[in-house]
Image (tube, rainbow, N blue to C red; front, side, top):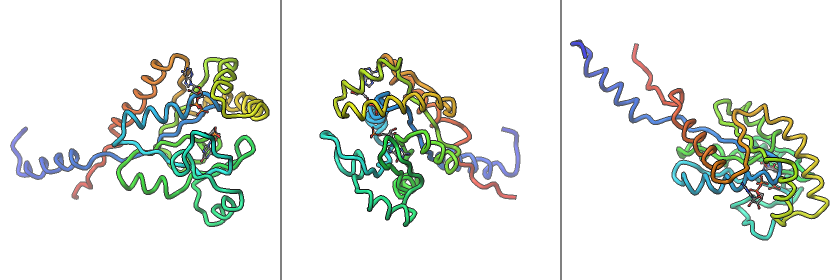
Length: 219
Ligand code: ADP
Ligand code: 5GP
């Protein structure tokens, strides 16, 4: 470094950059029902337990056998859901496959403030709304290898009635048509390969130089 009178000031600016960390952000995972979104969410939380936190949505849909209230969703009735809309508790909410789902403002704000990136598993309508509020977020769309394989997975999961599977498959076509709105599209064919891709996206996005917090420079 050339000699200069403000050498120590420059060095403390650099120290400040190194210690300031980065701005935390939201990671939205969308895709048709059965594409594998919740499987990716569990894998990302397993691999990055100290950096990522899951935004638990509220829903009016019935709890599935393996699901835990407060972990997978907050299961509430429609009246409670409507009351929370009135109280502006949701960042966004939508009717999906005939049920109400909503992202709770507190889930995102508290997690970002605690220095975590926040993982959301929400539909395309929710993804659009979240992008308007958090434009520096990362938006990942999970695609099934084919509609036939999607149907197999929905049936294999064994959580939905025949009527619900039909509705979810109809909606899948519409959602796949909107995948171009996302930053990344990952085909979930071979699980290991797809999981590596999603992990690589999260690692790369966490390392973006634009996310580094710049200390305010003195005049
Ligand atoms: P979503 O959350 O998108 O509705 P899930 O994560 O519940 O989808 O996945 C649907 C079903 O497909 C689950 O039974 C899951 O174990 C299975 N699955 C997920 N990824 C794969 C894959 N790559 N190959 C085969 N089955 C998969
Ligand atoms: P499932 O009933 O299979 O858990 O979810 C059905 C759909 O609702 C999925 O596409 C999921 O991403 C979406 N979803 C879950 N939570 C929310 C939410 O808070 N907001 C929105 N808009 N969609 C959600």
